[in-house]
Length: 168
Ligand SMILES: [Zn+2]
Image (cartoon, rainbow, N blue to C red):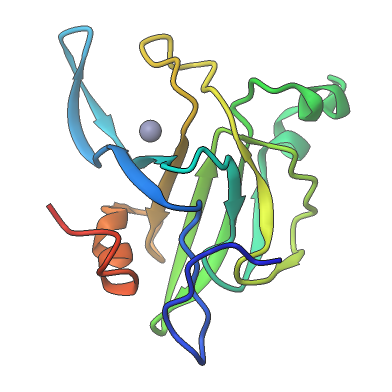
């Protein structure tokens, strides 16, 4: 059932979506003529499959709808197809710990502390409701190191999937 791209036989790694293409890079971008720091990369599936997969085994450490939706009906929010929901998963990749934010996804129903398997479907990417400049459905993917500093996801992904991602 796992549709991702497996690179390594022993430790399984999957691209977060099927046939990803880079839609927006990490770093400073100009939005409405103002500089904005884009803290991750945006990906779209070439084959238009919106399923989002865990890159590798991990532990859910933060699930947006559960924490931020207190007092509102979080179940309804989970069912909408336009969402800023995100999930943060702690992954160990090449012996380093990373916190990976999978952003603008819906359909996830994780509890914090829950384990996820490499290649497990964790949601579907949808439109970003905050991004009024950008109506394209996409997965925003951010990598944070152990100090919770953002790093360029391509630094990691280009090593795992050299055929798919290149460091610009
Ligand atoms: Zn983005």
